Image (cartoon, rainbow, N blue to C red; front, top):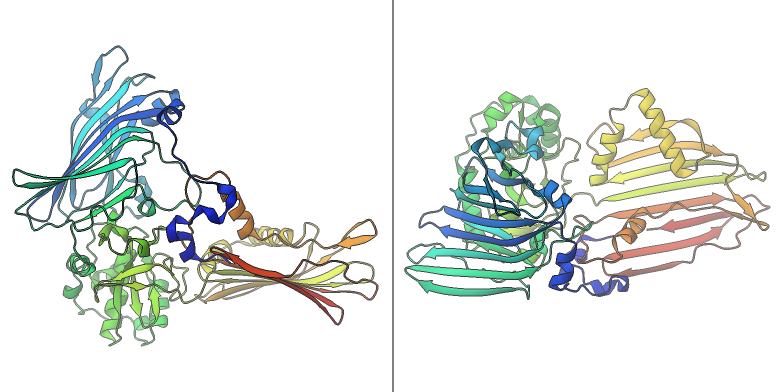
Length: 576
């Protein structure tokens, strides 16, 4: 079993796995030697307005060192949200090795919808300003200066590990003395010996500055912690408490202005929240999109019902409104479903930590990002979320833990053939995945799926009967699949003994591929359990010689339990 919490704490102390060794900073020469490009400087200045907005000025110069660097860096992308941000490119140019300057023309600057939100383009405000640098060759420099003006209150994330090595990165936050803006947690998160902090008061402003020099690039590794949880990431916010953050969202989402004057559909007339949830997902379509990729303003419940579709936020507001209309107490909870461990950042008061909205009702948290999620199952279980009605962080639970279980029962004949039954049970988020795989398959596709299941048992297994399913076509908390099979040669024979191979532990195998030679720790966004149960009904002419050794224990977040026993001619094996 792999649990969520321990993986995140301390960015998973690498001492737990001696194969990792200790992370060490490379010297300047080594991290520049094989770089495809190098940022000579990155200067970012935030100017906080006396009101609620701010501006960000960025100056960047990157040296192209290889063909790959040329291919990857010739286009520069500026992400922004058109609902509350504006982008102004002051200049962009290529400086050739000869010193000749090629300025970017207006027709070489494009503005497009962020392709990552294309499936929900009806609600997307996420855009990319793309600068196509002309004449880029190895040895040239690209230079760009631009400004982003935002209407939202100030918060930001600043990583001091970028996609390329950086000779100097400087982040400045300029706050007018007369401003009511506050930055109470400027340095509480950053823990990087390569970055130095200073604070200066002059000319009616308080200026905070972080400067990092000779910064190695960020290394891409599977299951690495999200940037916000890394020690080289700085989180900034003008909010002084979670209550203030909640008030911002309550105002933006217009929670107190939601009108209940809409006709209650028949499927919503039932007072049980689970049934209302199932009816809502059955009758309405959802366009999955993150909160800050939208304008953060929901449709009215009446509008969502009339359209028959909405974003996850719209469906959450509708569900919340129906419960309120029915006199059922509930609240809106903001969560992170992208792997950021909020508990570690509980004192940062950072609105940008959250990307989805759940509805809390009783002890369940209802999610609206996917039509295949059972009531109360969500992607934030074990993390902290922000209850904007109460103005505080709360622990998110999922109504069912995430577990995959395989139960394999074999009856061996004296001729060493076998007849068996195999059952699979999927719980929690695993139900969503198996529904997507099996729910709408055609007859031929089902035959292929059955072959895959049989191959997972044994490549020579033949189907007996038909595949049975339970919970596949409704939003059940568990989905079960079972089938019968036969094996002509279930046991491998060598040196006078028969061997029965047990299926691998996929979780452990996957974890093993993540460990060697890592720079960072390991994080998993959800706890996961994998269970294997095998029963062999042995003929009288066979008996066990050796079985897997029983054991149980824990190493950090990884726990296990293995047992085996022989009783009345049946050999049982259990692994969790």
